[in-house]
Image (cartoon, rainbow, N blue to C red; front, top):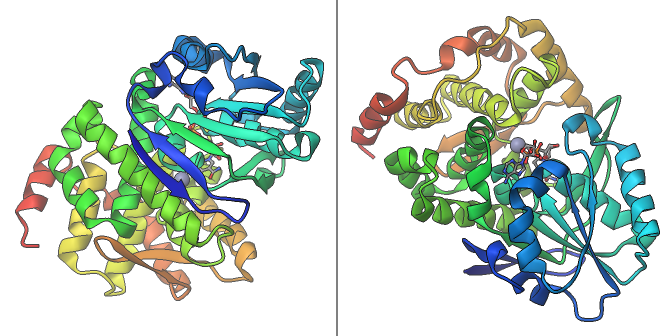
Length: 378
Ligand SMILES: NC(=O)c1ccc[n+]([C@@H]2O[C@H](COP(=O)([O-])OP(=O)(O)OC[C@H]3O[C@@H](n4cnc5c(N)ncnc54)[C@H](O)[C@@H]3O)[C@@H](O)[C@H]2O)c1
Ligand SMILES: [Zn+2]
């Protein structure tokens, strides 16, 4: 088991990562605070179906009360938070309650927000069960829900007291969800970790096949990177922005396609290809590095085809601007493992890249592209 601390203004908290942790009888129960008045397991029916036996064993004999809620993105709203909080009242939860949130990013964001506001805040542990949740959403304390007007518009910074990450739980994840999470894994390699990048280049087949040895290393490596970044910049005033690599166009693409056609990670895959191309056009990154990044994105297989929505993607980019006093912020690669934040990308270049987006997917995708990339001089 790997254990590392994540720094937060509300108090540092441990992330424990190890295969099989959540299957061990009584193990999770022993991590709960001693002076609690009750244990409440917040999850979804679907997650409970696949991870229930492991969770029940791990929490034995704490006798958690179970509150299951819909974890579809469309149910990530204030009504669901209200339902959970009313269920907590009915179940007798008071300020001494300990909440264990087990699920993907939706469960974590919703349950985390409920934990932050129930009785003005109760003890919270995350048990992430998707790849996105294990390497990203469970770490850093962002919680929240959507409004009809937009995603994640209501929420709180509420770091958990504990994160328990068990890669074994990923074995039931559907293939597309899993692969979509891998684009976020690639993101960490590009923004800060040349070694992770090399390992992914060499072992992507094994990672895709969920080979335990490589996957466990990759998950804990990414979780640690995210933990270090949010530990230095909890409120996203500076460094944390590097986590948005691939997300500027990725978010716009998701919005322009109504959040249905492409999964978040897939949109980030397209967004990374676009950002690499912008950096290449601006002479920021060497062609060899740009090619390697694009080849690694392509090694995950085809991305969903893009509808011709250049105008609406461009328009959505505009709405992202409002958050930064009228300037779009780009995260652009300088070399593998290093990015910079730039506000100097001319609109004409953005439009040009958006127009060529479908062609930015490397022609020689998959294994061949990877092999040729790994032969390039480093
Ligand atoms: N708070 C943050 O910092 C942060 C960061 C990134 C994403 N997010 C949020 O996370 C959400 C996306 O999270 P996600 O990608 O984990 O998707 P998700 O939570 O929607 O889960 C995807 C699907 O997988 C199912 N599932 C979960 N665990 C499973 C398992 N072990 N086996 C089989 N099926 C399983 C879920 O029931 C769901 O149907 C978005 O709402 C996004 O806004 C938050
Ligand atoms: Zn993301």
